[in-house]
Amino acid sequence: MAGRAGRTGCCEDFGRSILIAKDEKEVEMLWSEYVNAPAEKVKSMISKGGDITLPILGLISSDICKTMDELIIFLKDTYFGYTIYQNSDPVFRSTFQKTIESEVNSLYSDGFLELEGDEIKATEFGKRCAEGSLSPKSAKLIGSALKKIESNFIHVPYEELTEKIIHTACCTHDVLQGYVLLPVDGQERQELLDHWESNEDAYLVFPEDQEIMLRSIKTTQMLLKWIKGTPYSKLIALQGQVKRIAETIGWIVQGIARISEKPLFDFDDKLIEFLNTLTDRVYFVFPIKLSKL
Image (cartoon, rainbow, N blue to C red; front, side, top):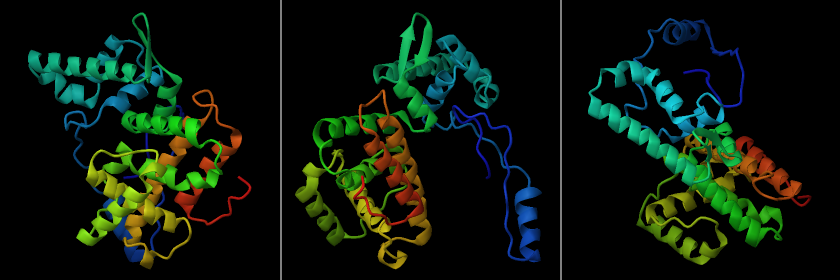
């Protein structure tokens, strides 16, 4: 799969995908499997029970849909609408519409949407969430963590927030879907538990589920080594796995930086600079000195 379409706030009308081959034989293989290969069957994520809150927020944030009726009509005209909704019975249609209304009400309650009569608008928080393609669940957790920084940690050196920010990212809904490391045995579980009990007060997020807590701590510790330039052989994870996790966490930290900006929070420019730098450190892996921050 190459490329990405429909990003909120973006107006690109051109894209390019580049396949790099090592030799002529690989050229033929790539051309056959990527260019001339038959298209895969398309399945609607809505019909598969995927989280629809972010797509709803994106439609409203981009002013494509401004009312509940427009939202329902738009979804009826999607691939899901043509293949499933229009061929379903009245009970299914009614249940689906009630589900959409419930999701909109939930987004409103969590501060992502605001209502002006029959018109639905995205709040600034909702726009930041949609622009960063963050799930509302992740954005809500990030917002709560930033409030703690605003009230408790604003006077500490910003580099001391590194572990807190990375751990917050590791606890988000988007990351927990498959971008965290699992404890390998009982001994490691106990070591992670001991670490949590000794440092619990230093974090911004406190997972109620012990499994999530263990995974988030292990992944955070790995990433702290990663941004210091630790070799792959000492990171207790495969190279591809490390890169995939780092790229995902870098994206989340970038979202944290975006949400931190005014007017949502009143942080100074140095904190935003620190978060943007941390994004690059996680994503590109270059050890730097943070004394100037």
